Image (cartoon, rainbow, N blue to C red; front, side):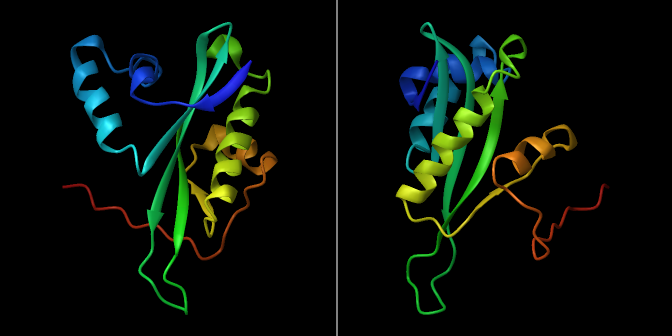
Length: 140
């Protein structure tokens, strides 16, 4: 198994993992290309077959506190095919994402996790943070 940065050439595999059908593939590939500077996809491959993916959003905070460079990351859309789960693929994807975050000098990396995956992120070095707050619009 290898983990590598992905790109537009991997759009079909990335789309399939996200449940995006062939009728939307061209638009999805355009989105991947258009967001290549801010949304970095990673894939895990086994025998040339994409078995998992994860994305790192690189964003910027407003300059301040004596620093003009206040970039941070957010982990998004971590997916491992069901038959490949519990084999270290998710951890390998996280290791690649966090290595990229270190290489880019990001201030921190966040993740918005579903309940089932919280323990996974805790095992991979994330922690609960008392200052992270969330606003959601009220339903109409």
